[in-house]
Length: 127
Image 1 (cartoon, rainbow, N blue to C red):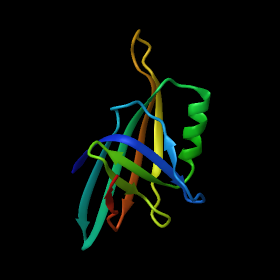
Image 2 (tube, rainbow, N blue to C red; image 1 turned 45 degrees about the vertical axis):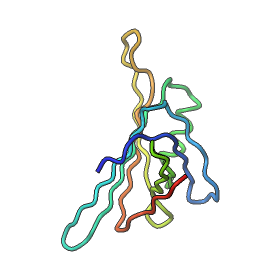
Image 3 (cartoon, rainbow, N blue to C red; image 1 turned 180 degrees about the horizontal axis):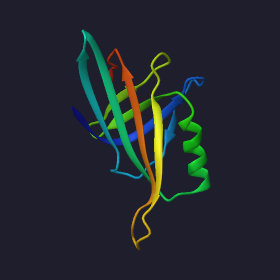
Image 4 (spheres, rainbow, N blue to C red; image 1 turned 120 degrees about the vertical axis):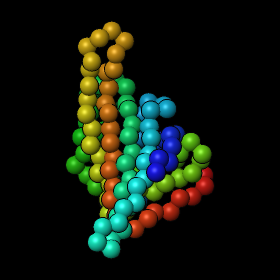
């Protein structure tokens, strides 16, 4: 089930109290939720895809910091609904790839995927 476009994303490291906004290239984010059943167990899977323009040392350091940490994400979709992705027991994980295509006007940035799996569903709220 594709939920739609991402307007805003924030993260909370499991050791932190508040959320921090994560900057990304507008209109490049999407969130997808799938529910599957295996041997009587239900698995809720969420994937978030984002793009961040321009490779820099500061952005790489921020992504590296999230790469090795467990986190919870708060995602606002295009309809103003807020999706919680992950918690202290079932945290979400971030992976990324950096790319410079080498052609004039081509892509220079990061492709980010945030993945989460849990046996339970997470609430969706209005902004």
